[in-house]
Length: 555
Image 1 (cartoon, rainbow, N blue to C red):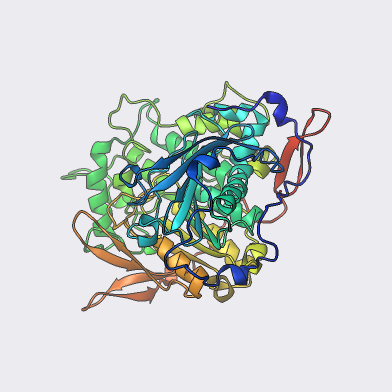
Image 2 (cartoon, rainbow, N blue to C red; image 1 turned 30 degrees about the vertical axis):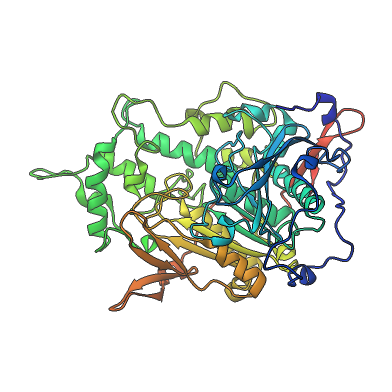
Protein backbone atom coordinates (compact mmCIF):
# COMPACT_ATOMS: atom_id res chain seq x y z
CA UNK A 1 0.00 0.00 0.00
CA UNK A 2 1.26 3.44 -0.87
CA UNK A 3 1.13 5.86 2.07
CA UNK A 4 2.23 9.45 1.71
CA UNK A 5 4.86 10.83 4.11
CA UNK A 6 3.52 12.61 7.18
CA UNK A 7 4.91 15.96 6.04
CA UNK A 8 2.60 15.78 3.00
CA UNK A 9 -0.27 16.34 5.41
CA UNK A 10 0.86 19.88 6.18
CA UNK A 11 -1.00 21.59 3.40
CA UNK A 12 -1.83 25.26 3.61
CA UNK A 13 -5.37 25.77 4.85
CA UNK A 14 -7.21 27.16 1.85
CA UNK A 15 -10.63 26.34 0.44
CA UNK A 16 -10.34 22.96 -1.21
CA UNK A 17 -10.97 24.22 -4.73
CA UNK A 18 -9.94 21.76 -7.40
CA UNK A 19 -9.24 22.84 -10.96
CA UNK A 20 -9.81 20.11 -13.52
CA UNK A 21 -8.44 19.82 -17.03
CA UNK A 22 -11.91 19.52 -18.53
CA UNK A 23 -13.04 20.89 -21.84
CA UNK A 24 -13.63 24.62 -21.47
CA UNK A 25 -17.21 25.80 -21.50
CA UNK A 26 -18.81 22.47 -20.50
CA UNK A 27 -22.23 23.25 -19.01
CA UNK A 28 -24.80 21.06 -17.32
CA UNK A 29 -27.02 21.36 -20.37
CA UNK A 30 -24.39 20.55 -22.99
CA UNK A 31 -23.01 17.72 -20.86
CA UNK A 32 -26.22 15.78 -21.28
CA UNK A 33 -26.51 16.18 -25.06
CA UNK A 34 -26.09 13.12 -27.26
CA UNK A 35 -22.80 12.96 -29.13
CA UNK A 36 -21.80 11.14 -32.28
CA UNK A 37 -21.10 7.48 -31.61
CA UNK A 38 -22.73 7.57 -28.18
CA UNK A 39 -24.79 4.45 -28.82
CA UNK A 40 -21.63 2.44 -29.50
CA UNK A 41 -19.85 4.03 -26.59
CA UNK A 42 -16.79 6.22 -26.30
CA UNK A 43 -13.56 4.27 -26.85
CA UNK A 44 -10.38 4.82 -24.82
CA UNK A 45 -7.87 7.37 -26.07
CA UNK A 46 -4.91 5.63 -24.39
CA UNK A 47 -3.93 2.14 -23.29
CA UNK A 48 -4.63 0.86 -19.82
CA UNK A 49 -0.89 0.50 -19.18
CA UNK A 50 -0.46 4.20 -19.90
CA UNK A 51 -2.81 5.12 -17.06
CA UNK A 52 -0.23 3.84 -14.59
CA UNK A 53 2.17 6.50 -15.86
CA UNK A 54 -0.19 9.45 -15.41
CA UNK A 55 1.23 12.31 -13.37
CA UNK A 56 -1.54 13.34 -10.98
CA UNK A 57 0.62 14.81 -8.25
CA UNK A 58 -0.30 18.41 -9.00
CA UNK A 59 -4.06 18.16 -8.41
CA UNK A 60 -4.62 20.82 -5.72
CA UNK A 61 -5.66 19.26 -2.42
CA UNK A 62 -5.84 15.77 -3.94
CA UNK A 63 -2.29 14.83 -4.94
CA UNK A 64 -2.50 11.30 -6.31
CA UNK A 65 -0.32 8.32 -7.15
CA UNK A 66 -1.62 5.58 -9.47
CA UNK A 67 -0.30 2.33 -8.01
CA UNK A 68 -1.57 0.00 -10.74
CA UNK A 69 -3.60 -0.03 -13.94
CA UNK A 70 -4.41 -3.45 -15.39
CA UNK A 71 -6.92 -4.91 -17.79
CA UNK A 72 -9.63 -6.79 -15.88
CA UNK A 73 -11.35 -9.63 -17.71
CA UNK A 74 -15.14 -9.51 -17.88
CA UNK A 75 -15.32 -12.73 -15.89
CA UNK A 76 -13.42 -11.14 -13.01
CA UNK A 77 -15.62 -8.04 -12.84
CA UNK A 78 -18.23 -8.27 -10.08
CA UNK A 79 -20.05 -5.26 -11.50
CA UNK A 80 -21.02 -6.90 -14.79
CA UNK A 81 -19.93 -8.66 -17.93
CA UNK A 82 -17.51 -6.05 -19.23
CA UNK A 83 -13.78 -5.66 -19.57
CA UNK A 84 -12.27 -2.81 -17.63
CA UNK A 85 -9.08 -0.95 -17.09
CA UNK A 86 -8.88 -1.44 -13.33
CA UNK A 87 -7.08 1.56 -11.84
CA UNK A 88 -5.93 1.58 -8.23
CA UNK A 89 -4.24 4.45 -6.47
CA UNK A 90 -3.81 6.61 -3.38
CA UNK A 91 -4.87 10.22 -2.82
CA UNK A 92 -2.74 11.91 -0.16
CA UNK A 93 -2.41 10.95 2.54
CA UNK A 94 -4.14 7.53 2.67
CA UNK A 95 -7.28 7.63 0.52
CA UNK A 96 -7.08 4.39 -1.47
CA UNK A 97 -9.39 3.97 -4.45
CA UNK A 98 -10.41 1.58 -7.20
CA UNK A 99 -11.68 2.94 -10.53
CA UNK A 100 -12.96 0.67 -13.30
CA UNK A 101 -12.96 2.13 -16.79
CA UNK A 102 -14.95 0.21 -19.44
CA UNK A 103 -12.83 -0.71 -22.45
CA UNK A 104 -15.92 -0.56 -24.67
CA UNK A 105 -19.51 0.65 -24.43
CA UNK A 106 -18.83 3.60 -22.13
CA UNK A 107 -21.73 6.07 -22.35
CA UNK A 108 -19.92 8.93 -20.60
CA UNK A 109 -21.45 8.08 -17.20
CA UNK A 110 -19.49 8.12 -13.94
CA UNK A 111 -20.77 6.36 -10.81
CA UNK A 112 -19.14 6.69 -7.40
CA UNK A 113 -20.10 4.14 -4.76
CA UNK A 114 -20.13 4.83 -1.04
CA UNK A 115 -18.76 2.82 1.86
CA UNK A 116 -20.25 1.38 5.05
CA UNK A 117 -19.59 1.42 8.79
CA UNK A 118 -16.17 2.88 9.55
CA UNK A 119 -15.13 1.82 6.05
CA UNK A 120 -11.36 1.17 5.92
CA UNK A 121 -11.55 -1.13 2.88
CA UNK A 122 -11.83 -0.68 -0.89
CA UNK A 123 -14.66 -2.94 -2.01
CA UNK A 124 -16.09 -2.53 -5.50
CA UNK A 125 -18.10 -5.75 -5.59
CA UNK A 126 -21.61 -4.42 -5.12
CA UNK A 127 -23.62 -1.29 -5.88
CA UNK A 128 -26.66 -0.70 -3.62
CA UNK A 129 -30.11 0.07 -4.98
CA UNK A 130 -29.18 -0.92 -8.54
CA UNK A 131 -30.56 -4.44 -9.06
CA UNK A 132 -31.37 -4.92 -12.74
CA UNK A 133 -29.69 -1.73 -13.93
CA UNK A 134 -28.59 -2.93 -17.37
CA UNK A 135 -26.28 0.01 -18.20
CA UNK A 136 -24.28 -0.73 -15.04
CA UNK A 137 -23.83 -4.39 -15.91
CA UNK A 138 -22.87 -3.72 -19.54
CA UNK A 139 -20.16 -1.11 -19.08
CA UNK A 140 -22.03 2.15 -19.63
CA UNK A 141 -20.59 3.53 -16.37
CA UNK A 142 -17.07 4.11 -15.16
CA UNK A 143 -17.30 3.13 -11.48
CA UNK A 144 -15.15 4.00 -8.47
CA UNK A 145 -15.04 3.64 -4.70
CA UNK A 146 -12.55 4.26 -1.88
CA UNK A 147 -11.63 3.39 1.72
CA UNK A 148 -12.71 6.80 3.06
CA UNK A 149 -9.15 7.72 3.91
CA UNK A 150 -7.89 4.94 6.16
CA UNK A 151 -7.20 1.20 6.26
CA UNK A 152 -8.31 -0.02 9.68
CA UNK A 153 -11.58 -1.69 10.67
CA UNK A 154 -11.92 0.53 13.71
CA UNK A 155 -12.64 4.15 14.58
CA UNK A 156 -9.14 4.51 16.01
CA UNK A 157 -8.06 6.09 12.70
CA UNK A 158 -9.83 9.29 13.84
CA UNK A 159 -7.08 10.00 16.37
CA UNK A 160 -5.28 11.44 13.32
CA UNK A 161 -7.14 14.71 12.57
CA UNK A 162 -6.32 14.52 8.86
CA UNK A 163 -7.92 11.10 8.57
CA UNK A 164 -10.93 12.24 10.61
CA UNK A 165 -11.49 15.12 8.18
CA UNK A 166 -11.18 12.74 5.22
CA UNK A 167 -13.77 10.45 6.81
CA UNK A 168 -16.01 13.30 7.90
CA UNK A 169 -16.39 15.25 4.67
CA UNK A 170 -13.43 15.30 2.26
CA UNK A 171 -12.88 11.81 0.86
CA UNK A 172 -15.73 11.55 -1.65
CA UNK A 173 -15.10 14.99 -3.08
CA UNK A 174 -11.42 14.23 -3.54
CA UNK A 175 -12.16 10.91 -5.25
CA UNK A 176 -14.68 12.56 -7.56
CA UNK A 177 -12.06 15.09 -8.63
CA UNK A 178 -9.37 12.48 -9.24
CA UNK A 179 -11.65 9.93 -10.91
CA UNK A 180 -13.05 12.52 -13.30
CA UNK A 181 -9.52 13.65 -14.17
CA UNK A 182 -8.45 10.08 -14.96
CA UNK A 183 -11.63 9.52 -16.99
CA UNK A 184 -10.99 12.69 -18.96
CA UNK A 185 -7.46 11.63 -19.82
CA UNK A 186 -8.31 7.98 -20.53
CA UNK A 187 -11.17 8.68 -22.94
CA UNK A 188 -10.06 12.09 -24.16
CA UNK A 189 -13.31 13.64 -22.94
CA UNK A 190 -15.04 14.06 -19.59
CA UNK A 191 -17.98 12.19 -18.14
CA UNK A 192 -21.24 13.80 -19.21
CA UNK A 193 -23.18 12.82 -16.08
CA UNK A 194 -21.91 11.84 -12.66
CA UNK A 195 -23.79 9.92 -9.98
CA UNK A 196 -23.24 8.87 -6.36
CA UNK A 197 -24.85 5.85 -4.72
CA UNK A 198 -24.39 4.94 -1.06
CA UNK A 199 -26.14 3.32 1.89
CA UNK A 200 -25.58 3.71 5.65
CA UNK A 201 -22.23 5.49 5.98
CA UNK A 202 -22.42 5.64 2.19
CA UNK A 203 -25.75 7.45 2.57
CA UNK A 204 -23.97 9.84 4.93
CA UNK A 205 -21.40 10.41 2.18
CA UNK A 206 -24.23 10.99 -0.30
CA UNK A 207 -25.75 13.79 1.75
CA UNK A 208 -22.34 15.26 2.54
CA UNK A 209 -21.80 15.63 -1.20
CA UNK A 210 -25.20 17.25 -1.77
CA UNK A 211 -24.65 19.69 1.10
CA UNK A 212 -20.96 20.58 0.82
CA UNK A 213 -20.07 19.90 -2.81
CA UNK A 214 -23.33 20.43 -4.71
CA UNK A 215 -21.76 20.40 -8.19
CA UNK A 216 -19.82 17.14 -7.86
CA UNK A 217 -22.73 14.91 -8.92
CA UNK A 218 -25.78 15.33 -11.14
CA UNK A 219 -27.70 12.65 -9.25
CA UNK A 220 -27.36 11.14 -5.79
CA UNK A 221 -28.89 8.10 -4.08
CA UNK A 222 -28.80 8.18 -0.27
CA UNK A 223 -29.95 4.96 1.40
CA UNK A 224 -30.50 4.65 5.17
CA UNK A 225 -28.16 7.60 5.68
CA UNK A 226 -26.15 7.78 8.90
CA UNK A 227 -26.00 11.54 8.42
CA UNK A 228 -27.07 12.46 11.97
CA UNK A 229 -23.77 10.82 12.78
CA UNK A 230 -23.04 12.03 16.31
CA UNK A 231 -26.48 11.56 17.85
CA UNK A 232 -26.99 8.27 16.01
CA UNK A 233 -23.74 6.56 16.90
CA UNK A 234 -23.45 7.88 20.44
CA UNK A 235 -26.89 8.58 21.84
CA UNK A 236 -29.23 6.35 19.82
CA UNK A 237 -27.01 3.26 19.90
CA UNK A 238 -26.12 3.74 23.58
CA UNK A 239 -29.80 4.09 24.43
CA UNK A 240 -30.58 0.80 22.69
CA UNK A 241 -27.86 -0.98 24.65
CA UNK A 242 -28.75 0.55 27.99
CA UNK A 243 -32.50 -0.09 27.78
CA UNK A 244 -31.96 -3.76 26.92
CA UNK A 245 -29.24 -4.41 29.52
CA UNK A 246 -31.17 -3.37 32.62
CA UNK A 247 -31.30 -6.69 34.49
CA UNK A 248 -28.16 -6.31 36.64
CA UNK A 249 -26.00 -6.19 33.54
CA UNK A 250 -28.01 -8.92 31.82
CA UNK A 251 -30.36 -8.37 28.86
CA UNK A 252 -34.09 -8.32 29.41
CA UNK A 253 -34.62 -9.77 25.92
CA UNK A 254 -32.94 -12.50 23.89
CA UNK A 255 -33.43 -13.51 20.28
CA UNK A 256 -35.85 -16.25 21.37
CA UNK A 257 -38.32 -13.51 22.32
CA UNK A 258 -38.29 -11.77 18.96
CA UNK A 259 -40.40 -14.06 16.76
CA UNK A 260 -43.40 -14.24 19.13
CA UNK A 261 -43.05 -10.51 19.81
CA UNK A 262 -43.04 -9.83 16.07
CA UNK A 263 -46.14 -11.99 15.58
CA UNK A 264 -47.96 -10.02 18.26
CA UNK A 265 -46.96 -6.74 16.60
CA UNK A 266 -48.19 -7.88 13.18
CA UNK A 267 -51.52 -8.86 14.70
CA UNK A 268 -51.78 -5.67 16.70
CA UNK A 269 -51.01 -3.50 13.65
CA UNK A 270 -53.44 -5.38 11.40
CA UNK A 271 -50.85 -6.72 8.96
CA UNK A 272 -52.26 -9.43 6.71
CA UNK A 273 -49.24 -10.36 4.60
CA UNK A 274 -46.43 -10.38 7.16
CA UNK A 275 -45.43 -6.76 6.49
CA UNK A 276 -46.67 -3.56 8.11
CA UNK A 277 -47.11 -1.22 5.16
CA UNK A 278 -47.24 1.94 7.27
CA UNK A 279 -45.69 1.40 10.71
CA UNK A 280 -45.79 5.15 11.36
CA UNK A 281 -49.56 4.75 11.63
CA UNK A 282 -49.38 1.89 14.14
CA UNK A 283 -49.34 2.70 17.87
CA UNK A 284 -49.48 -0.87 19.22
CA UNK A 285 -48.30 -1.01 22.85
CA UNK A 286 -46.27 -3.99 24.15
CA UNK A 287 -48.09 -3.60 27.45
CA UNK A 288 -51.00 -5.38 25.79
CA UNK A 289 -49.09 -8.68 26.05
CA UNK A 290 -47.61 -8.15 29.52
CA UNK A 291 -47.70 -11.27 31.66
CA UNK A 292 -50.55 -11.36 34.13
CA UNK A 293 -51.95 -13.93 36.48
CA UNK A 294 -53.22 -16.81 34.41
CA UNK A 295 -51.46 -15.69 31.20
CA UNK A 296 -51.15 -18.49 28.68
CA UNK A 297 -48.66 -18.55 25.83
CA UNK A 298 -46.09 -15.88 25.09
CA UNK A 299 -46.08 -12.77 27.24
CA UNK A 300 -43.63 -10.07 28.32
CA UNK A 301 -42.43 -9.36 31.83
CA UNK A 302 -42.79 -5.77 33.05
CA UNK A 303 -39.05 -5.25 32.47
CA UNK A 304 -39.37 -6.55 28.91
CA UNK A 305 -42.34 -4.29 28.24
CA UNK A 306 -40.29 -1.33 29.42
CA UNK A 307 -37.35 -2.28 27.17
CA UNK A 308 -39.53 -2.72 24.08
CA UNK A 309 -41.36 0.55 24.70
CA UNK A 310 -38.05 2.38 24.96
CA UNK A 311 -36.69 0.75 21.80
CA UNK A 312 -39.78 2.01 19.97
CA UNK A 313 -39.64 5.50 21.46
CA UNK A 314 -35.95 6.19 20.92
CA UNK A 315 -33.74 8.14 23.33
CA UNK A 316 -35.32 10.90 25.40
CA UNK A 317 -33.87 13.40 27.87
CA UNK A 318 -34.94 14.12 31.43
CA UNK A 319 -37.85 16.19 30.09
CA UNK A 320 -39.09 13.47 27.75
CA UNK A 321 -37.80 15.20 24.62
CA UNK A 322 -36.21 13.13 21.88
CA UNK A 323 -32.40 13.16 21.69
CA UNK A 324 -32.60 11.46 18.27
CA UNK A 325 -35.64 11.81 16.01
CA UNK A 326 -37.05 8.39 16.97
CA UNK A 327 -36.57 4.71 17.65
CA UNK A 328 -37.30 1.34 16.10
CA UNK A 329 -40.43 1.03 14.00
CA UNK A 330 -43.06 -1.55 14.84
CA UNK A 331 -42.55 -4.56 12.60
CA UNK A 332 -38.74 -4.43 12.78
CA UNK A 333 -38.40 -6.85 15.72
CA UNK A 334 -36.87 -9.80 13.85
CA UNK A 335 -34.08 -7.53 12.65
CA UNK A 336 -33.03 -6.69 16.22
CA UNK A 337 -31.28 -10.06 16.57
CA UNK A 338 -27.55 -9.66 17.10
CA UNK A 339 -27.77 -5.88 16.79
CA UNK A 340 -30.02 -4.73 19.62
CA UNK A 341 -30.84 -8.04 21.27
CA UNK A 342 -28.30 -10.80 22.04
CA UNK A 343 -28.75 -14.52 21.56
CA UNK A 344 -28.29 -15.45 25.21
CA UNK A 345 -28.53 -13.91 28.67
CA UNK A 346 -24.76 -14.27 29.08
CA UNK A 347 -23.88 -12.29 25.95
CA UNK A 348 -22.00 -9.00 26.47
CA UNK A 349 -23.70 -5.71 25.60
CA UNK A 350 -23.96 -4.87 21.90
CA UNK A 351 -22.27 -1.50 22.13
CA UNK A 352 -19.07 -1.59 20.09
CA UNK A 353 -20.06 1.21 17.72
CA UNK A 354 -21.02 3.59 20.52
CA UNK A 355 -17.85 2.90 22.49
CA UNK A 356 -15.56 3.38 19.47
CA UNK A 357 -17.34 6.55 18.38
CA UNK A 358 -17.08 7.98 21.89
CA UNK A 359 -13.43 7.11 22.31
CA UNK A 360 -12.02 8.13 18.96
CA UNK A 361 -14.40 10.18 16.79
CA UNK A 362 -16.65 12.73 18.46
CA UNK A 363 -14.08 14.45 20.67
CA UNK A 364 -11.12 16.43 19.28
CA UNK A 365 -8.79 14.29 21.42
CA UNK A 366 -9.13 10.54 22.03
CA UNK A 367 -11.00 9.49 25.19
CA UNK A 368 -9.95 5.84 25.44
CA UNK A 369 -11.55 5.29 28.85
CA UNK A 370 -15.16 5.90 27.75
CA UNK A 371 -17.82 3.22 27.19
CA UNK A 372 -21.50 3.21 26.24
CA UNK A 373 -22.36 3.37 29.96
CA UNK A 374 -20.87 6.88 30.12
CA UNK A 375 -23.49 8.26 27.74
CA UNK A 376 -26.02 10.46 29.51
CA UNK A 377 -29.50 11.11 28.21
CA UNK A 378 -29.78 14.78 29.07
CA UNK A 379 -30.04 17.94 27.00
CA UNK A 380 -26.82 19.18 28.63
CA UNK A 381 -24.90 16.10 27.48
CA UNK A 382 -26.37 16.46 23.99
CA UNK A 383 -25.23 20.08 23.81
CA UNK A 384 -21.74 19.04 24.93
CA UNK A 385 -21.52 16.52 22.09
CA UNK A 386 -22.65 19.10 19.55
CA UNK A 387 -19.82 21.39 20.64
CA UNK A 388 -17.23 18.76 19.75
CA UNK A 389 -16.64 17.58 16.15
CA UNK A 390 -20.27 17.67 15.05
CA UNK A 391 -19.26 20.19 12.37
CA UNK A 392 -16.86 17.68 10.80
CA UNK A 393 -18.80 14.44 11.20
CA UNK A 394 -22.47 15.28 10.63
CA UNK A 395 -24.32 15.96 7.38
CA UNK A 396 -27.54 17.53 8.62
CA UNK A 397 -27.83 20.77 6.64
CA UNK A 398 -31.34 20.84 5.17
CA UNK A 399 -30.66 23.74 2.80
CA UNK A 400 -29.99 22.05 -0.55
CA UNK A 401 -30.46 25.23 -2.59
CA UNK A 402 -27.06 25.01 -4.26
CA UNK A 403 -27.58 21.36 -5.20
CA UNK A 404 -31.00 22.14 -6.66
CA UNK A 405 -29.65 25.20 -8.52
CA UNK A 406 -26.98 23.00 -10.10
CA UNK A 407 -29.71 20.73 -11.46
CA UNK A 408 -29.03 17.96 -8.95
CA UNK A 409 -31.52 15.18 -8.27
CA UNK A 410 -31.70 13.23 -5.00
CA UNK A 411 -33.37 9.90 -4.20
CA UNK A 412 -33.50 9.11 -0.49
CA UNK A 413 -34.59 5.66 0.60
CA UNK A 414 -35.04 4.04 3.97
CA UNK A 415 -36.01 0.56 5.12
CA UNK A 416 -38.77 0.77 7.71
CA UNK A 417 -37.38 -2.35 9.39
CA UNK A 418 -33.94 -0.78 9.81
CA UNK A 419 -32.25 -1.92 13.02
CA UNK A 420 -29.20 0.38 12.77
CA UNK A 421 -30.51 3.73 11.48
CA UNK A 422 -33.89 4.49 13.00
CA UNK A 423 -36.15 5.54 10.08
CA UNK A 424 -37.41 8.58 11.98
CA UNK A 425 -34.01 10.20 11.49
CA UNK A 426 -34.29 10.01 7.70
CA UNK A 427 -37.91 11.15 7.77
CA UNK A 428 -37.06 14.09 10.04
CA UNK A 429 -34.22 15.19 7.77
CA UNK A 430 -36.43 15.01 4.68
CA UNK A 431 -39.16 17.01 6.40
CA UNK A 432 -36.53 19.62 7.26
CA UNK A 433 -35.47 19.73 3.60
CA UNK A 434 -39.09 20.29 2.61
CA UNK A 435 -39.34 23.18 5.04
CA UNK A 436 -36.03 24.71 3.95
CA UNK A 437 -36.78 24.33 0.24
CA UNK A 438 -40.24 25.89 0.19
CA UNK A 439 -42.57 22.97 0.77
CA UNK A 440 -43.34 19.48 -0.49
CA UNK A 441 -44.04 20.39 -4.12
CA UNK A 442 -40.83 22.35 -4.62
CA UNK A 443 -38.83 19.64 -2.86
CA UNK A 444 -40.36 16.84 -4.92
CA UNK A 445 -39.10 18.61 -8.02
CA UNK A 446 -35.55 17.55 -7.15
CA UNK A 447 -35.59 15.30 -4.04
CA UNK A 448 -37.86 12.40 -3.11
CA UNK A 449 -37.96 9.97 -0.19
CA UNK A 450 -39.06 6.34 -0.53
CA UNK A 451 -39.86 4.23 2.56
CA UNK A 452 -39.55 0.45 2.13
CA UNK A 453 -41.82 -1.62 4.43
CA UNK A 454 -40.14 -4.49 6.27
CA UNK A 455 -36.68 -3.82 4.83
CA UNK A 456 -33.75 -3.95 7.25
CA UNK A 457 -30.56 -1.89 7.18
CA UNK A 458 -29.51 -1.42 3.53
CA UNK A 459 -31.39 -4.61 2.61
CA UNK A 460 -32.57 -7.86 4.09
CA UNK A 461 -35.46 -8.14 6.49
CA UNK A 462 -38.96 -9.34 5.69
CA UNK A 463 -39.97 -6.92 2.93
CA UNK A 464 -38.95 -6.97 -0.74
CA UNK A 465 -35.51 -5.35 -0.79
CA UNK A 466 -34.28 -5.71 -4.37
CA UNK A 467 -34.84 -2.62 -6.52
CA UNK A 468 -33.25 -0.35 -9.10
CA UNK A 469 -33.10 3.26 -8.00
CA UNK A 470 -30.12 3.93 -10.26
CA UNK A 471 -32.14 3.69 -13.47
CA UNK A 472 -34.83 5.87 -11.90
CA UNK A 473 -32.17 8.43 -11.03
CA UNK A 474 -30.53 8.48 -14.47
CA UNK A 475 -33.95 8.88 -16.11
CA UNK A 476 -34.64 11.81 -13.80
CA UNK A 477 -31.30 13.46 -14.58
CA UNK A 478 -31.18 12.88 -18.33
CA UNK A 479 -34.87 12.81 -19.30
CA UNK A 480 -36.50 14.91 -16.61
CA UNK A 481 -38.67 11.92 -15.64
CA UNK A 482 -39.16 12.05 -11.88
CA UNK A 483 -39.77 8.67 -10.18
CA UNK A 484 -43.42 8.36 -9.13
CA UNK A 485 -42.83 4.82 -7.88
CA UNK A 486 -40.07 2.23 -7.57
CA UNK A 487 -40.80 -1.50 -7.78
CA UNK A 488 -39.25 -3.60 -5.02
CA UNK A 489 -38.90 -7.36 -5.37
CA UNK A 490 -38.17 -10.38 -3.19
CA UNK A 491 -35.73 -12.60 -5.14
CA UNK A 492 -36.51 -15.57 -2.89
CA UNK A 493 -40.21 -15.86 -3.67
CA UNK A 494 -40.68 -13.57 -6.68
CA UNK A 495 -43.11 -11.25 -4.93
CA UNK A 496 -43.03 -7.53 -5.60
CA UNK A 497 -44.65 -4.32 -4.48
CA UNK A 498 -44.22 -0.67 -5.44
CA UNK A 499 -43.09 2.05 -3.09
CA UNK A 500 -44.24 5.61 -3.58
CA UNK A 501 -42.72 8.97 -2.63
CA UNK A 502 -43.28 10.08 0.96
CA UNK A 503 -45.97 10.47 2.32
CA UNK A 504 -47.71 7.87 0.12
CA UNK A 505 -47.90 4.14 0.83
CA UNK A 506 -48.82 1.17 -1.34
CA UNK A 507 -52.35 -0.09 -0.72
CA UNK A 508 -53.48 -3.47 -1.98
CA UNK A 509 -56.29 -3.46 -4.51
CA UNK A 510 -58.11 -6.16 -6.44
CA UNK A 511 -55.61 -5.84 -9.27
CA UNK A 512 -52.39 -5.00 -7.44
CA UNK A 513 -51.33 -1.87 -5.58
CA UNK A 514 -52.28 1.80 -5.66
CA UNK A 515 -50.81 4.84 -3.89
CA UNK A 516 -52.61 6.02 -0.78
CA UNK A 517 -51.82 9.17 1.15
CA UNK A 518 -50.65 8.27 4.64
CA UNK A 519 -52.15 10.86 6.93
CA UNK A 520 -49.94 9.51 9.71
CA UNK A 521 -46.84 10.33 7.69
CA UNK A 522 -48.22 13.62 6.37
CA UNK A 523 -49.15 14.79 9.88
CA UNK A 524 -46.02 13.45 11.58
CA UNK A 525 -44.25 16.09 13.65
CA UNK A 526 -40.88 15.03 15.03
CA UNK A 527 -39.83 17.26 17.91
CA UNK A 528 -36.27 16.59 19.03
CA UNK A 529 -33.53 18.60 20.70
CA UNK A 530 -31.39 18.76 17.58
CA UNK A 531 -31.95 20.65 14.35
CA UNK A 532 -31.10 20.69 10.66
CA UNK A 533 -29.86 24.24 10.37
CA UNK A 534 -27.14 25.57 8.09
CA UNK A 535 -23.88 27.06 9.26
CA UNK A 536 -22.74 24.44 11.77
CA UNK A 537 -20.21 22.93 9.35
CA UNK A 538 -16.46 23.25 9.89
CA UNK A 539 -13.40 22.45 7.78
CA UNK A 540 -9.94 21.55 8.99
CA UNK A 541 -6.40 21.45 7.65
CA UNK A 542 -2.72 22.09 8.24
CA UNK A 543 -1.37 25.62 8.00
CA UNK A 544 1.97 26.43 6.41
CA UNK A 545 3.59 26.67 9.84
CA UNK A 546 2.45 23.21 10.89
CA UNK A 547 -0.68 24.00 12.92
CA UNK A 548 -3.92 22.07 12.61
CA UNK A 549 -6.74 24.61 12.30
CA UNK A 550 -10.51 24.23 12.23
CA UNK A 551 -12.70 27.04 10.93
CA UNK A 552 -16.36 27.51 9.97
CA UNK A 553 -17.19 26.55 6.40
CA UNK A 554 -18.28 23.75 4.08
CA UNK A 555 -15.16 23.30 1.94
